[in-house]
Image (cartoon, rainbow, N blue to C red):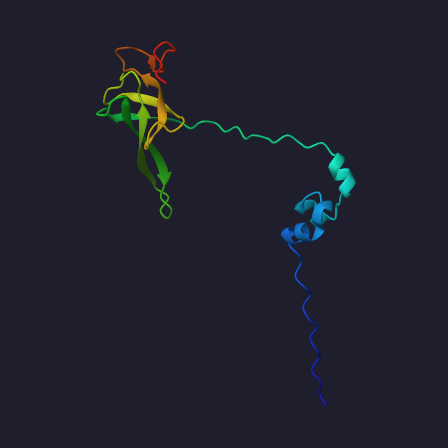
Length: 154
């Protein structure tokens, strides 16, 4: 008679790093080290010097755009345009976003090309600060739009 071979049971799934960390207790250096088999004795762990906590320093977002509105006091609405490819047809499309920027001296006028920089939230919708106003051909340069220290409002 034909006997069907008995299928060997599947091997148990490999434990995850979290399972290693939970099962290992205080003697584990870290979850990743536990998977690799590295263990540290409890006494050695107590005597080890604690590493300082690293703080991530991220760059502030800097955008350039055109002022489209200055109706609010100390606020300029800046439209930032960018070209992105269409997901299917790959043709470049123009997309724009509007950001409200803090203009403490009310220097901006509609149509100015400006540079804005991300900052702490100033209001519900204002998270950018005016850094530079690019003047037109008649002025021949740019205007630094940062507030002087003597005029700065806190």
